[in-house]
Image (cartoon, rainbow, N blue to C red; front, side, top):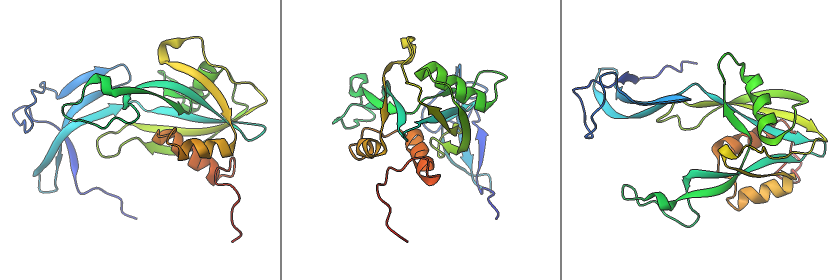
Length: 223
């Protein structure tokens, strides 16, 4: 199957600025500890510029779904400042910081340290965030958080934690509030209620169901 792309991505020519930005010579808007935001253009095959946009480039990360002996899933309650508060509609481009900030349930995740294998990152993040060790760990795929504007991809893992009791880290720099084990039925109710909206966590739940490690669908009809 040919999956080549008919468009290409280039750094922005400093002389071209269609949306009023003032990019630096190398088109890097901001360097972050885990990636960079670059001003890029999308060109057609005939080299026409289709549009330009901020392109988030990162070193990649991991997320891990911990499942205990009873088939329950451990999720973290976290403060996320980039999410609109419940009941608030975006007023973009006139939105204000007070519109943002919610507590949500998510799977443990994080970024890779230098010279670290992704499977090692997943095990480390699990231990750091909920205090449990991965008794065995399986890579189940990769998800792109937004394939339209970002190359940020997250490697997905599922692991057993046996009968270990999850606990949140004492390090509050990451905004961790609570950790809880959810039965598959409780997990489904959280999703139905809109309490889990993180695409990474939802992807992990999907893969967990696909591999019959958990069952949030309830009783499956006979085929």
